Image (cartoon, rainbow over all chains, first blue to last red; front, top):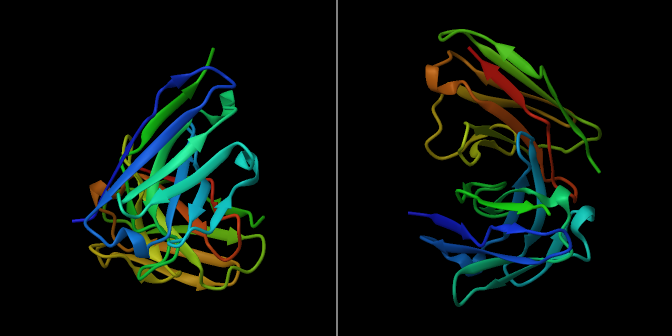
Length: 119
Length: 106
């Protein structure tokens, strides 16, 4: 059974940093694109960043230079290092498998972890 | 950036009725379009990928159609558990973008 479990969400002050982790199981993590998607309270879905199986990265413009996606294929883990956090980064952050693979788009999602940026 | 516009914003229907949700792209996305369902407090669930392919475990009452810039998600006969928010999403060009969502209400 495919499982994605996010952790690391917290309350942080503007300008602060946070590192999110997504622990993957039930599939061959090292062969899959992985992605972070966020959802601000009461709002829609926003793609944040994706990482290819061998390390290529893509980011939405609003987080470029502040967020870094990374992965450890030996640990079956995906990370999101978030620096210089802003109030507008407040959201539930989801880890998802995809967008390219045997089944395209995001076929499995974690339950999400809440990041609150506030003073 | 490709903008996806979903209509209507809210759709009020009853169980047993047919639902038709629309997603229009600001430029062609070929068939690289997906649909998701999201219920309150839950993660999104993939329903349709590549415009018309049902994801694993998705009931046959859900179907997707379209290509280029105009896409439709059809639910042939609504069940009580289908009342949720639906999002479309394109992966034709970076950045990946989502529509703003259609809320399907009873």
